[in-house]
Amino acid sequence: MGTKKTGVLIGGSGLIGGTIVNFYKTRFPDTVDIRAPSSKKMSIREERDIRSYLIDVNPDFVINAAMANLGSSGQLAYEVNYLGPINLARAANALNIPYIHISSSATLPAGENLREEDTLALTPQLNHYAKSKLMAELTLKRMAENDGLDYTCIRLAIVYGAHDHKIQGFHRLFFSIADEAMPVLFTKKHTLHSYSNARKLPFFIHHVLANRTAFTGETYNFVDKNPVDLATLILTIKAYLQLNQPKEIYVPYWMANSGKKCLDILLRILRRIGMKATMPPELMFLDNFYKPQTLSSRKLQESSFVDPMPGETIFTRLPELVVYYLTRWSHENLISTFRDIEQEKSLDHTFSHNPEYLIDTVHAQGIGPFADMQKKMN
Image 1 (cartoon, rainbow, N blue to C red):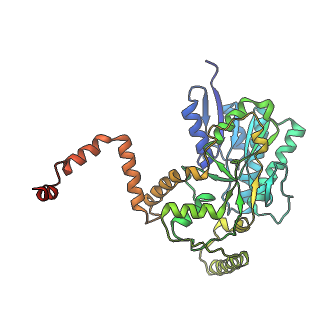
Image 2 (cartoon, one colour):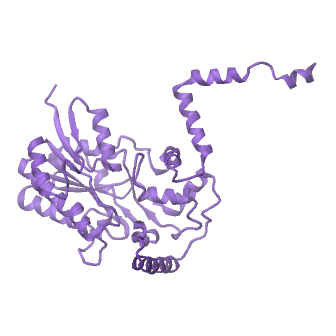
């Protein structure tokens, strides 16, 4: 057996980072030692921490999956989404090891079939998240061209998957529907978006690390082949949850945007009188609910990577995600409905793992002839 490799992953507590860590720990425990230091051990915001930790560990590769929350201040977005990733890349370059950077479709404009190079122009008007993510992509490209950085940038769209401890992105949409906080559709018909499957991503990263010559210096849109219509997805989730809303009524953009502006004014007033109140971070992407953004997966499809689960999409995973998140949100008292779904999940789990308990329960409840039927027959 070859020498065991060591990898360092930043952002291990998030959906993407946690999925990658779990992938290596379950599939390659004998060949890869994946380290996911907490911010106490190594803060991505501190250059000294990065240099010291990577010198001590001396890893064979670095993966950055860290990101600041969508509603973060400019300084935090700058430090976590830009300066930290660049310092990680500088350290990886000094150690002469590959650096895998996870980026976002926020660096791309609205539109359809967007290629890897179709990025936004860097302007002050961009929101903090998009601006910092785009800055990182631009600097990494320059470092590869000028300093020989061995990196690959993987750009994700709307990510879906289990084990997300934060309610944001797709899971915020799902939560709003489940919590019956979405009475109507805040989108328009035929608004398509690309989605990224968190479960498939570690397979791609592993392949990229094993084939550096083909993937170094490249950016890939890592998205499902077929885009998804937002209204169809919302109504499908509604059907799974057997809810009466949201109603199939499409709110015009001008009306939704006016509501957003009124909310912003109200929050400013509340903050002035000392109440802590912030705009839901997803509202900064209100435009995206009404404008399509689909990423081309052609470059990914034409690469040497083979999709390990070609038939898996957001729709095929919905039943699993519905049960997982509703059970969890019920346990955390974030949601008070759908106890019946939780019970179905419990029964399914018991049937799969403890059939003896079920058979004993049925026996205890009685398995003799139905008494009322016997009386009628007699």
